[in-house]
Image (cartoon, rainbow, N blue to C red; front, side, top):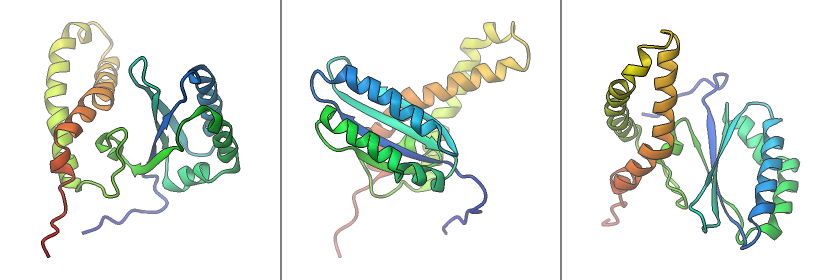
Length: 192
């Protein structure tokens, strides 16, 4: 059964973009990143842009661009301003951008460099998220308890939330997605 969303309610929309920089173009590309990020921030509904710079010596960048709703993300992606910035990046990059759009926390289930045409079933995303969140919260509460006892009661949940979100986004979900990729994205049965 498909979930019906209220079109007036923001649901969040994310675009995952992969770029490969030409050798020696890293500094100019970093300046380009700064400029295009500032332009995106001017658009309605812009939430954030997260930039993953890969290991030293690698020239691959992955951007996670978040907006409040799909319409606002599409407005940015289709804008003349963005097209002009993409044209400026052509001399700096080896290949055109690879881009895929997801909504909600689905970007947690996208591997860098892989674009899946389909989304994992929601039940599998929920199960994998619970597998990551529950032990992480238990561990954070145990490890951070000496610090959390000394801070104001309103600040303690914020500290846990920040640590949890950072761990999920940058460490746990990318690795769990790699481990469970075949379960999340099973090969279609071609015997018909």
